[in-house]
Image (cartoon, rainbow, N blue to C red; front, side, top):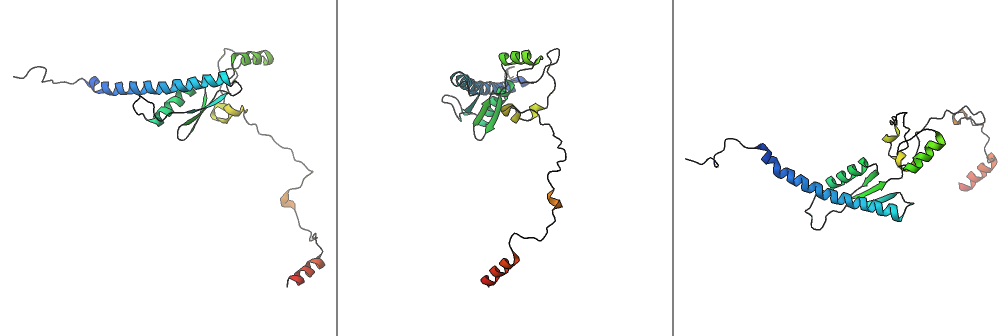
Length: 191
């Protein structure tokens, strides 16, 4: 007869996913190394060039001593982590990231704003309610608002200005700039 070990009637499904989970953990570890490099570059830039509130970060296509990885997936992971952290991130093909923290208001700026205007705002300039709850804002949908600190556009209704005429109301009078005799002479010389 066969031994019990060689004949199994059931298989543990968790064992099938064990290797896959190990690979995912290793991949995540490598992505976090690249994210740590981005954090280091952000900190260096803010310390050395405090007037610049942005940095360009090149995601390396490979790291020495690290197995090859999917660069696109790594870029997506780094972008998501930085955006969750409050940074504005813009991707340029093939591996360049523009990272900005210019839209972020630090504690000092928020306290000064509260002193001057009488109400609190969050770190992104959105007004807070009475219970320090963020009010809804449509400004988040437009990424240019983060960089240029644009306020939401308001439509301006222009009043009718009677100093100007509409182009469609123009009627030609027939009075030309040049004399008709002069035009005839020019025409005769050309022929």
